Image (spheres, rainbow, N blue to C red):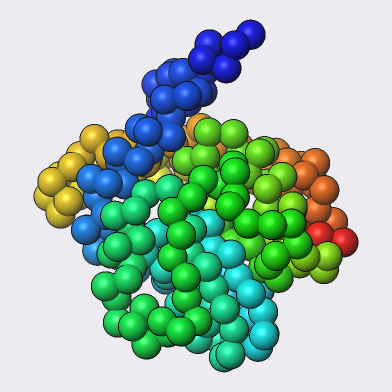
Length: 249
């Protein structure tokens, strides 16, 4: 089968694989200027707690070099550098307007000598093998056309002993709580997107994309299949989000 005949999910739509990246870019081009505000509003600020939990488990150290893929406006990189002290971070994102917004943040100016901003694709990273100590991707891997290829690239660019950490929305094990969360997600979040970002459709996609992402155990196996050892996960807020960790051993 030719590549242009393969299909994938874009929210609840089925689209040709070669169209997904462009559609995802369109979503984040549209919401870039209001992205950080919407994160606070639609999660009631809990995304900050999740990202701090990511840093707690990651335990950044001085001298490490981070690749923050789908890093957008730099939230993870800023936290990493603040905890590590003297370290380096590269923020890579497919959507340049997200990086532009990140560069405007006060943290970016304060940490400018430790930060690089790169436009790039998670499935074809523009870096040599064994280049980074840590690879993070936060609420981004579900937007990648072929997540297994992104994980393979993560393994390639990490140095031996390097750490992968993925923060992503996931599945709530309790059916009743999942039902309630679905009602909130589908009925409230797109309306917030319309009011705050003037874009309900993009947030409808984001909600739908969460439902198409593999559950915790399935994604854990994907991490292992990419070659990572000592792979584990931790649920956050009853499984609304989940942290997956693995090591290049």
